[in-house]
Image 1 (cartoon, helix red, strand yellow):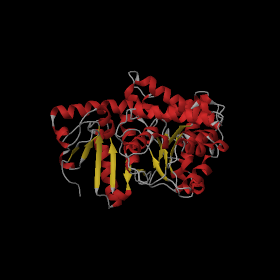
Image 2 (cartoon, rainbow, N blue to C red):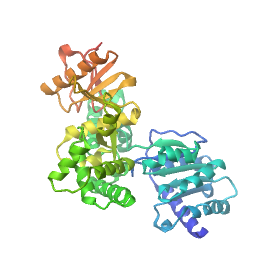
Image 3 (cartoon, rainbow, N blue to C red):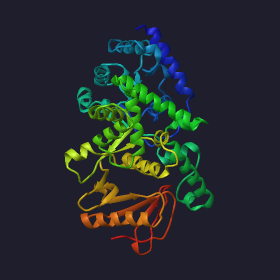
Image 4 (cartoon, helix red, strand yellow):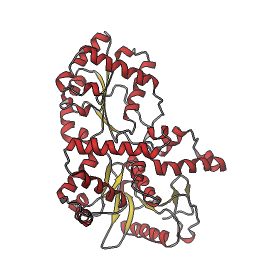
Length: 423
């Protein structure tokens, strides 16, 4: 490729970085580390790169040393792995000082891994982003040779969302009437629009979310994997959304689609779900007590962002609440999160954190029969396991004395109310 084209792309990207508004995120980077950032499309990976670049510039690095390239730029449509070496020549032409390399959505270039490894071997500071989980596969980690640190970038947490919309938070604000009201209002919005950073810039948030979903569905899943049955994929995602809190086996899913006239094999549904997971649209939650085969084959599936899930759900806030809890817990405990469901004992608990010795139930409202059932499940699990230290019942916003039950629960807006200490 011509060096002039590379320079045009780099200089144009510099102007984007200078103009963009950056919301502080709860991520930290090692000062000399190279990183591969992955996550859902539009979750904020690029902005994290821009923040790192602006930090470098504030520390005295010149813009000519910054090589930032977005590989979704249509001018690079014909770029191949063989062209990547030209980037080093371009950097040398722009500055005789050390370069800093930032490559956005580089998974579009087949064979990018060897170039990235060579940069790291040459002690070049390098950041890479991508929207496909295969970038962190064991095979990829072998090729990169441990030279990059991995970071999963999530949509805004609720704390980050509050920062973005300018709502102060903390114990004092929670306890103030006006402060608490502002936080609860923000949470009501967050529950429905999710945490994709750019959604806050749009009046028609549903239209924006729909465009992101279509990009993931049509570009990241359909086109990338050569799917020839888009209707089956679309309806499968709809069924996944409607059953987000339940275990739906692939056999059951195949039957449900067959009932509405969709011709698709069970194997194809397994593949489609895998593609959705690779694109970070869905993530699985497995049953702690199941056998390995059943645990892998019959997880619950949650959406990585509530805004995308809300495209399918109308007046189903209880489903949105449980999905939001799943997202928040997966972010905080990515390797220690399960559900617990036993056919033998009848125990059914929404979330179980074995290393934290914690069980969590989710109910949208405390209506007597529902919270009784949730509490019975939590208590039964505590008696069964014998090592639980914390039982939590999450609600949307209610704070009610649970009387003799004496168990803590937390409102989803973040206020913990202790009505007694369980043993």
